[in-house]
Image (tube, rainbow, N blue to C red):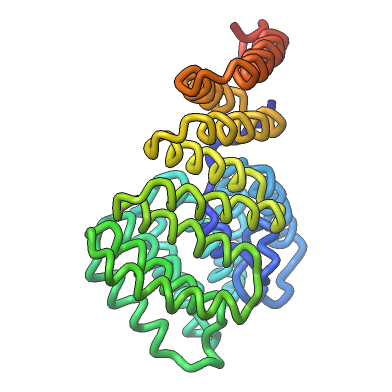
Length: 322
């Protein structure tokens, strides 16, 4: 079993993307100029840890890269390390230090006469985490008022997505839909599966909040298919689980059981055994509610397989997991 300590949402992965491919490694929109071997070594180790989902290790090595960048007083490197470390810390819930690092990144990029639009995106996400919704509006306004030369389509898309989520948080669904339409217009022009998936997931959230769980489920299915094409499999499995939950709320227990099963099987393949076990319980409940003996048999077979894997998996003390 791998040592995943946390997982970021698709939106968070967008922050860390150097291009629209969303490879899942931390880097700012424009990589810093080459610095020195010590700095680059820390950065490479941090990126590899991030790709594996080990945010604790990634944050440790981004911290070291930041210390090295400060030592040599390299503004672009300081900004890059501070930004990437802040993203890891946000995912780990360390919001106060993340905020200070983002302020440092903005200051250093200003000194370097470089764009800091990606920092504004992270600051707006942080403000949302703090439920400082007025700050989200102010920060995203700053980004959207900047010229096309200073922002990318992905960054403008992110700004509208965050604004739509904030509107959902505040139950302002008409506003959420309007912000979503602006985001979808950008995503369509970029023709990027990960961006389209983010928009589909947001559409699903709005439908769910509007009391239409069956429609929400269809959007989650669309999101899962797009994430599969983008090779974001953890996020794909999460979207499948959300589709199952929406079908369950709509009383479509057969569809719910199918989606729960697919989600759990994918998580099992990723080594996420506890997550898979929980979702398989939901799958069995839905299959029973639907009276589908065939699906119940498949679910029970996967539960047996999972139990065997967990029994053979060493625990931290070196004994099999029980």
